[in-house]
Image (cartoon, rainbow, N blue to C red; front, side, top):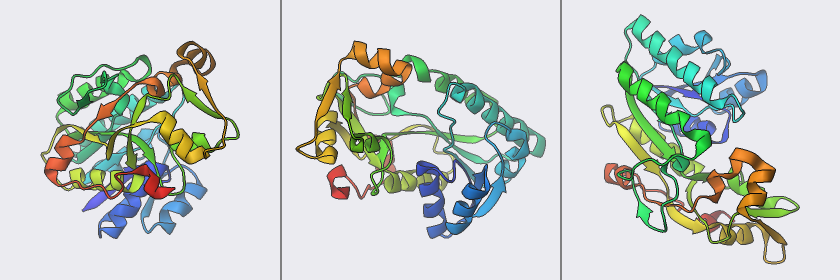
Length: 280
């Protein structure tokens, strides 16, 4: 399979790229800089130079692949508009070339909102908190275009064996928990998540929404204590203080969620890391 990966030098995209190479696929990674390109080549993939903000320069090469994993994001104020423009460029390139690639679009668990202490799966309705509702509009545009074979993957809170991802915040000199230590985060290791992306990329026609969570919900206070150590001081910010200090970015981490990857499990996804403490 010819696989094109955006965000190929990042935590998630890099894991997908390496998993694709290991599986024997012909993988191309989008790289914005020479440093990113060197990492992509070092991981055994081909390089497509390009910037997420300038999709006209790489969209045609992307849609020429059998499958695209879209794992790139700016993570800034322009995240929504940049993502939308990139997906619109893929739609236009698909129409221009007559290609209909498999597209695995990255959503997010925060689109499901607070689950009220219950375990939910992909059948649950969306209840997006303010900063990420634009994702659903972009997905609706992709679905309406019908020029890609679309599946949407919603990763849990991603971490890796080097302490990267969102859990890295608990290695800071001053450890903070937003909202309430009892709030639960669904977790997934980057390597397990990469296998979820590959599984969907290799299954044309499997559309709709997919959750990728290996642990349905782990209390954030327990996570922080396990990473920071028993002697570390953990400061709890209430909702008002958290939103004042961090703005919209505080809403997601303060959701209490328990989410199960029912559809991926039915397709055969079997995570290796079902307890994040395996990596400590």
